[in-house]
Length: 142
Image (cartoon, rainbow, N blue to C red; front, side, top):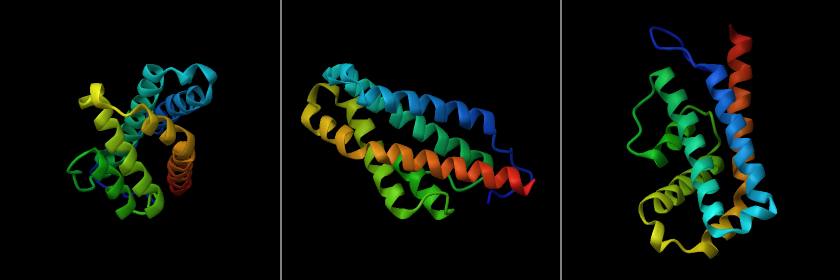
């Protein structure tokens, strides 16, 4: 359950919009058009960024500790039992991949990106379910 006090409240509409964007990227990743390396890179980077944005919105709204980096955002969510350890670990890996895609674009191994897409799509779903569950619990507690 989310904590309350003098902090801002989580904006459930904003989080839902980001979850919708995440779902669109996730759906696009399994479409045949995503076989293009550049499109796949863009979709993975964008989906990862949506997850990071959701995590950081929850963290800031709740006044939890400031993450050291994007990957640490998922550790903070794990510390507050928003996500389970296995999901947090997968999302930290995804944040790392996002950083590689953004900062070392020319050196990206497209087979690694393709493997991540093939084997890790469920992590987006698991993360979205955890956040949706949190929003539902928060709405019930009001």
